[in-house]
Amino acid sequence: MIDIGQLDILTLTIFAPLVGAFVLAFFPSDRVSAIRRGALVISAITFVLSIVLVLAFDPSVVGFQFVQEVGWIGFFGIEYKVGVDGISLVLVLLTTLLTTISILASFGPITTRVKEYMIAFLVLEVGMLGVFLALDTFLFYIFWEIVLVPMYLIIGIW
Image (cartoon, rainbow, N blue to C red; front, side, top):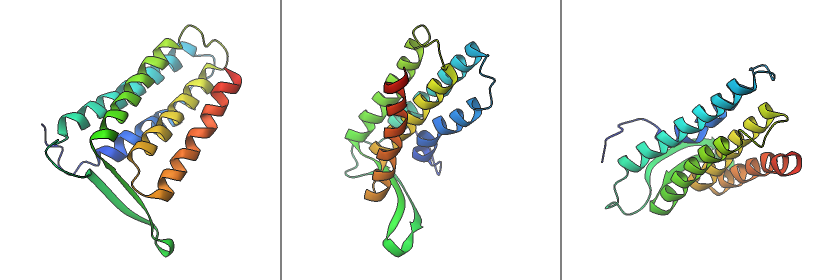
């Protein structure tokens, strides 16, 4: 077990792919190999963050760990609240691993709109991670809706 101190590892893990997708948006569309490598590196970084999360997780603790709470819409009692337990930890690790594998596996078959595909896949990862780590019902709903848009595009276009 490692100590990650005050680092907001869950927020970093959730939003690292979104930052990467934003960076990829500025790549020229004709630089396909750079876009593919960039998406792979971003997903690999997220996978490494999930491994750090696994190593820092204490299985003897009952309840959620690494909980982060930030007030969001106070009038309705809605907040940005994320945390991880044993089940969601496994789902986060699987999500980040399978996203990395899926992006690597898409290098051959995806030949059109590669930039858009990679951005959609990274945004999809953000939504999936948020769904597994959200502890607020409204936040869960927001992340669930985030999953729908890139999934629709990936299924409909590619």
